[in-house]
Structure formats: structure tokens, C-alpha cells
Image (cartoon, rainbow, N blue to C red):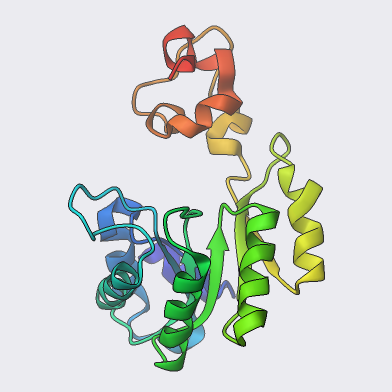
Amino acid sequence: MRIIDEALEFGINLIDTSNIYGKGESERTIGKAIKNKRQIVVLATKFGAETADKVNQSGASRRWIRTAVEQSLSRLQTDYIDLYQLHLPFEFVAYEEILWTLNDLVKEGKIQHIGTSNHLGWQIVQAQNISDRYGIQRIASEQTPYSIINRKMEFELAEVAQRYDLSLFVYSPLSGGLLTGKYKAGQAARSDSRAAVLKRVCRYVGPAIGRQQTQI
């Protein structure tokens, strides 16, 4: 909370989180930190990457989106979210259903803008075309990984963003810690390291995390 206070004092005004970070604790902490400063914060969170075992407690169905947004609003102690993002592409629900649901939430004032994260260019184009066809809310932003060793954003997303008036913002500029030099060739990563916890990082780390984990 002290870090957030200092960031706001120095002019940072965008705070981004997700309903899965810390199993909701990230949203709760941010909610406490900005409770009396809500008007100066552009607040962004995400849904759609949950790993719940129970049916209808994850994904991107109309039912779950409405449940997820109410849970996030409660944890964040706010009555609206500035940017609500689909955390991952969700192949089991049509974009029409997702976009119409988000469009309704915008009309109700619970969210201001909609965005995506970890999407490919063609998926964003598909979604934008659907929004244009029905005259509903368009995706305003895409959040994507970007670093000196992961430059995929430059090949396609940058052009899509320019053509479709999309804002881009990035995460993982240090590639999960790989670019800090913490992982050494021939040495397995510590079991509590980001590379070990987030298995998807392994494809960037390769042999630096040892034979056993590269096979995950």
C-alpha cells in the first residue's frame, strides 16, 4: 500500500491487476489503497483465467462475466472499473456473447472500457469486426508480453493496434526474471522462482532451469 501511495504521488495513475492474482488478494489490497483516491486512478483488472474446479466459476460465459465483475467490484471497493480485460482467449464461448455482455456492463456503468490480454492479432480483428457489425463496444486495449527476447508484439499486434485504434501496454519486460541474470546456464531454477511457478516461462529459459523442468 505504501508503494501504491508513492506511485500515485509521483504521477503514476494506472493500476492494473487481475481477479486471479493472489487469489483475489491483489484486488483487495489495491481496493484498500485507493479507497479514498479513486478519482485519480485509472483502474484495470481482468477476468477469464480462473482455474476453479466447480462448473460456472470460471471462463467467459455471460453468467460468469457478470459474477466475476461483481466480485472484483466488491474486492476493489469501487462501483466501476475503468478497464475490464479478458485475460486469455476463450475458445469455448463466442466473441458475440462475450462482447454483448461487456457492452451491457458498460451501459450499466459497471465498467468504462473493455480490453484483452494475451490475444493474437487475428483474434482482436475478429472481435473488432463483431463489435462494428452490431454497433457495440469495441476493444480499447491489448496487454501483451514484450521484452528484448519476446518481440512478437512487433510482428503483428503493433500493426493491428494502429489500424484498429487500439492501445497497447505490455508486461513481463524482464521475461519473468530471465533478463535479470538470476538464472544461470547449467543450474536448475529454485523451486520458488517465477520460472518454476509459471511453467509457461520455461520456454524462454530453456536449459538454464535444468533438464527436469524443461520437459514440463
